Structure formats: C-alpha cells, structure tokens
Image 1 (cartoon, helix red, strand yellow):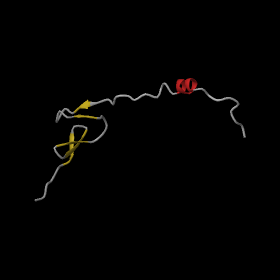
Image 2: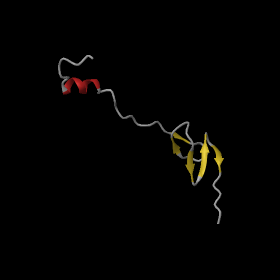
Image 3: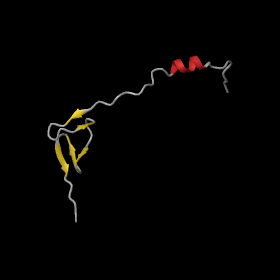
Image 4: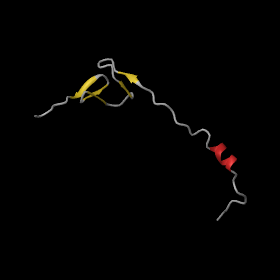
Length: 63
C-alpha cells in the first residue's frame, strides 16, 4: 500500500480547506402571511402549516 513520503504541512492542509465556508440561507417572504421562511419549504404560522402561500394543514386545537 502506498504511504505518503512526507508530512503534509498545516499550511498546505488549510489551503485545501479554504473554500468550505458557511453561507447564509436565502429567505423568502410569504405574500399571504408576511412570514419570512426558507423557500421551497413548508413553514408554521400560528400553528398552521403553509406551503407556497397556501394553507396546507390548519391547526385544530381540541379542548
């Protein structure tokens, strides 16, 4: 099996990893509720589940 002939320095290792960065998620505003959410994902507003500006599941509280 092949083994490295020389130790890879910390500088060389860190140069390889420079492009792994945290990015801020893109956000969208709902036209129906005005809530800020991640696009193409369902989101909660007051216990109701919305997707694409439409009510998907209504909150029904028993009691």
